[in-house]
Image (tube, rainbow, N blue to C red; front, top):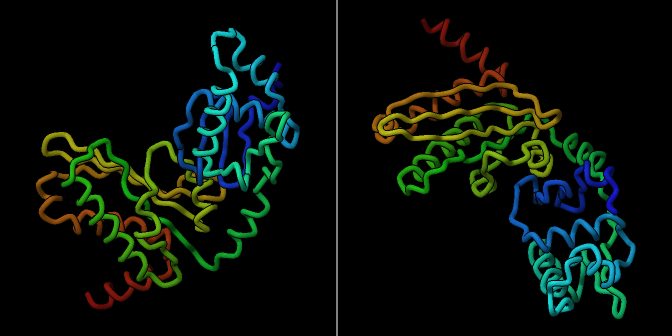
Length: 268
């Protein structure tokens, strides 16, 4: 019987996080698809890292109904699928090792990464931020182009603020999604904060919600909803990007923003 303590917690290994209770697997904080049988195999292997899990144990716990005619083939397929998801190899395994004639074992590796993550994060000088592409349910090419233009404009503008390090668009272009783990992703990217958001279109109305998240504790540093006419944004997406920058700049570069206001006041 599985231990409730193991089921209740998220297990970390390498760049992955696995929740045995929900069967949810994440890589760099992003949820990735894991086949049900492969998920059960991973959960069983992770109960006792380093220990050989015999084929009979897999059969007893995962195929109790004995409905599978070819158990060996089904187990092999599940292991193969799991390795494919983890990017692992049977020849040079990093996670799942085949023990000839016995079964399989999960290669024990450090699962608590908080100290190394703190060291890596503390190694970043000054303020650093990753501005991620906006999540959107629409796969419309026009919306995708708007998304790209807005985020690139925000990155370009914020990168000019003194003392602020901003990750390039090419670095973050594939990182998006409403259910991503901002803290884990931020720690992996070596930034202090992550700007994330969602873009929804309804007829000629475009709604954007953007927030800035502190990677250290997951708290929201800033958040705001923007409501615009889609046709206006389509004609001039830079204007919306500049509105977002105007909200982000005082938080990320308060001194530079103060000097900017002072110059404007003197000029007036």
